[in-house]
Image 1 (cartoon, rainbow, N blue to C red):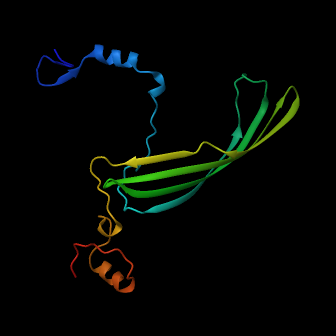
Image 2: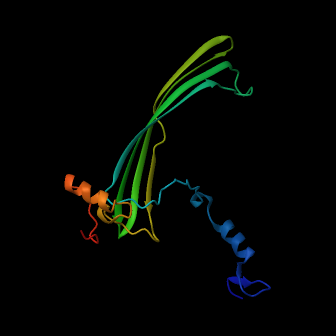
Image 3: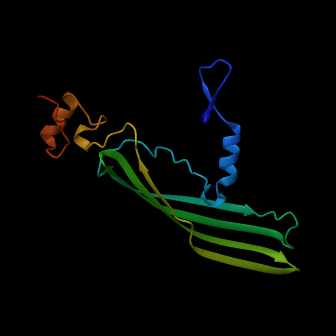
Length: 174
């Protein structure tokens, strides 16, 4: 019998459990990495599109160490401004994009240990995030003038009179 065994119905192949266990035992743990799901990572955007984003996160409150550290009345306040960049491009005719996120954190923490008040200030870069996405199936790379979200119809023709730089579909006849 080959790599796959047939079930009683004979129609669907099923994976041999011994093969799965063997692969898991022989596979080094260093190459088993977690994946991060990014929403809209494979969204088809017109090539050469760029986006710069700036977001901000703020947290304030008490910190509970559950007795693991001899701290009492621990409180913290930190903020994280985040700068992001997105660029779409064509990768061998397929829609692709690259994204980068650079957060910077500023935090003030204070508490009491052994009846002595303590204060801690931290500021600096936090873990950055980089992502490259390529649509391997579906999603061919398209310039803005032929992208399905490009405006069509009379409204577009009116705007073309006012704006000569507006992208125009090549299959559109006036």
